[in-house]
Length: 447
Image (tube, rainbow, N blue to C red; front, side, top):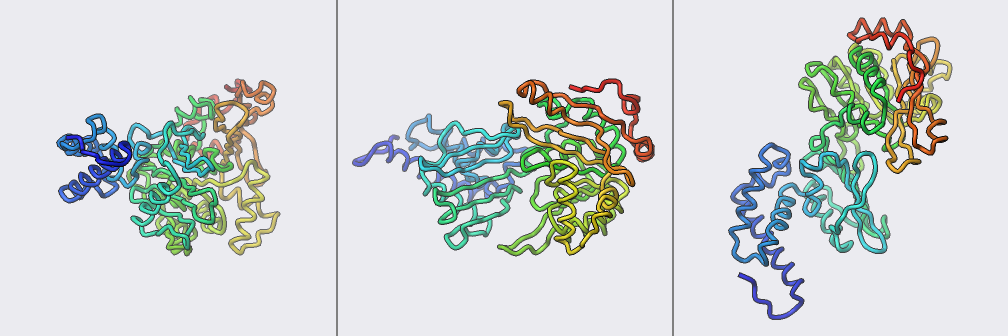
């Protein structure tokens, strides 16, 4: 039955009628099936069953504005079930490659972008008509997780029930309107495989094989470094798919990003904050990891004083210590690590810095994101062996000169040095698969 409108704009009245139907059905289902509205429910394998229940409830309504609206109403209710509302479609199983969603204010109104394959893309439709809708949307999300978003708390950084993380900025802090980022939970986006990274051109197959055969299976201490959005976490998660599922693994991080679904004997640890106060920080997590004697220890990112506890883990873990951080090359890495020790109250003499780095890492990998080509793809820039007493030995490096000379058309890597014989022997002892191509250089240039 089509509702009778006596006055006002018909489209506006239709929208109000649709909203009324959505709220009534959602309220009914929340009473009959409260499990549908617990956020985590749509991460489970019964998503299709849940959607069928919602669709049936919608189709039995006789007061739909028009039957064609059924799909939109189902989508809206599914959005309420997860707490993501109008943005729910970015969180479905068919959108696993989307890593984050951005809401950007402008003089023309709020715009929505999403992150996928290492770059941002504009959304194809309008999700919010004005800043007021964005404000109500994020105030509801923040209230649900106990972190009110108000003029007195104009910046909120909070966890959502499914493990996603939001950072929302508004009021006088963001004059053009509400700005927000939702970084999707790793539970909703499985790790990118190393094979996919090869297909996307981040690194050649030979280098991928070498890293897995020698350094993952050889239980090496690995550091992956690069600037923001260069693919550090993506790269570590891809390597993590080759860890033996039964190895006792501990993962510590500031935000929940390093989930590795293939690991069975794993403990994920995350910093705990209340308001502006950190209750459990990375240093405490690192100490906890050390006391639990893991086979592998992963500290997702070192930024400051946690370097001290992390260095203790690195020197004592026999199965391999992995971490990431911000540095573009060996020189910037040395400077950053020295500064981190200073943050922790340790005035590390410069002449001992390389010894400390050698005790922490067998291998450091540098990644970046190029901006010449249209793809702006993430790229493995350098693979460097850290040799105690000798310094830094570049094994593989990206040929930046060839890339620049060809205007971004040619991506190739230079096989510059072999892994040292002493390191190969140690890695083999720990389980590495040493192939003839790792003991001699047959091809200098790799594509």
